[in-house]
Length: 393
Image (tube, rainbow, N blue to C red):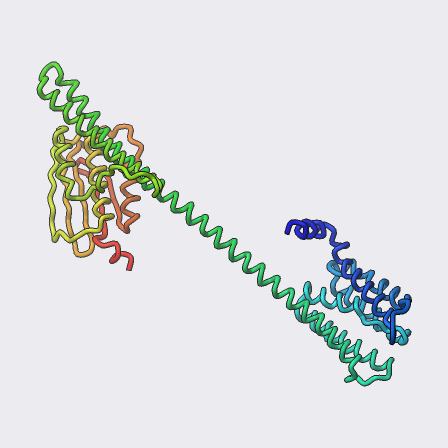
């Protein structure tokens, strides 16, 4: 299998030799054909062999000038038939040139030249040999010329078909690679959001509770001990959620490990309890019909509320936050409002929290708006679809 490939590559770099290769079997066949007698073999008719060899010389340039070489070889064979009718070998070089023109040129040109050459060769042969146009030898030359053109067109059609199939395969492979890269990017962004939500929320609480414990350690050891207990609980919860998030990176054949369940809106009470223990008053209200939500919507709503409350506790200098879950006919509106002072210091946040909120909402077909209120405080409003199927129809 490797030797033909090596030869093919070598011939691709030497196009003149590649174009002249058909001359070798043509000369051999011409010598053998002229050596056949009525009863046994005799010495080849060297004049016909020499003429065949000379007529094949232009074939070395057939791929560079297919039309010119086809016309030149056909004209040469017609001239030989006219001035040396006693020789009149089969126009082999013309057939190769017609094939090359059909395989490399346009269909219109190939068939015009091929049909014209077939008629001319047939007519000249019949005239110089006093044969009928419908005679066997004349029709054989006509068939050869038409067959060479048809074969060239068939080869060109097959090459185009293979090229199109190869292009489709390459395009499909590129699309698969692009889809794989897109999925990897989406998964990376999603995991980054989860890590940000978990780390920012729990570490903010741990930092706040550590500050409380440090402040009360001497004045009120009992409250300081309680704050340390909250730090322990929050750090354990952060580790559990981090373990569950990082567990998403495991391969399917990895050993199963302990994974925390996906947070849902039913877990809001626990979230609110942790924040209230840190000194932030949180009030949760639900309005409308509590329609069933998809897990994606529940997780998105929970993470948006978690991030909004974390930002309030960390940046807003607020004492109270109201969370309203308004269940509509087709969407859930989540509103988180705090009473932070106008112009309260905002800290050195990176803004990734708000970006993560919007990305989560957009991923399921929802929206998020956030900004300060004129009367003071900050408000986050998220509109999320109740059903992803209903949204996508």
